[in-house]
Image 1 (cartoon, rainbow, N blue to C red):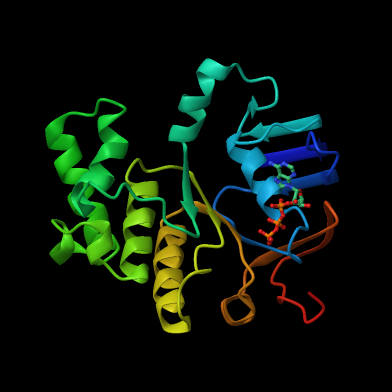
Image 2: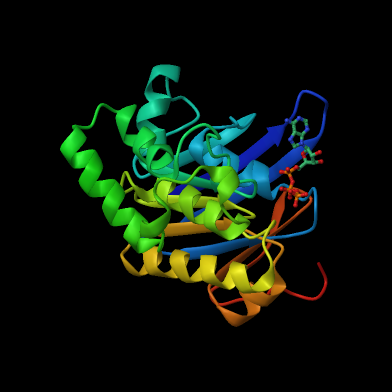
Length: 228
Ligand SMILES: Nc1ncnc2c1ncn2[C@@H]1O[C@H](COP(=O)(O)OP(=O)(O)OP(=O)(O)O)[C@@H](O)[C@H]1O
């Protein structure tokens, strides 16, 4: 699903955030991306949905090579990838329902399909009773559930999450992880950058560790490691 070949990323300020990355991630995998702060985890995942473009190297999403992708084709790529952030990034003036529906309105989905899909994902994340509320009326965990619902309403093949539990307490983090597990069980690939040792060690999946812009560990069912 994702293949990176010899990927380098140097930011304009001279920082090298990826220093020759080779990796292959298959359809249906659940992958944690771990590593110390500033190691290059966010850069690594941002390049997958073309939020950042590498300075050199190749990145394939399915059979599309992203580094040469034309700007006009980027929205099409983004429709196939759901993205979840640490700070939720919900639209404050829209209700829960509208925040999720918006992702479908921009691609001009019909009102009846929108209604059906939004209702379905709200059920999946357990928010059917909060559809008319605004983000500031919700807890952090609920806001993250809205953000996950929004990321999957389009039925993407890949969901990328950058520190999705970073702002949440341990119990709420577990609830969020249950939702990601459910989405993964339905066949969606999940790539998640995280600093959460508890989750990585207790809910084992593939672990890719990045340090200094390089993959220093890649284990099928790895631990978080005490060294980072
Ligand atoms: N837009 C940018 N311009 C310049 N330098 C950047 C930019 N984004 C990231 N960097 C630098 O690249 C390096 C890697 O950053 P990145 O955000 O990928 O790390 P990270 O592993 O996700 O860190 P954290 O765990 O703290 O989120 C850091 O030194 C950072 O300062």
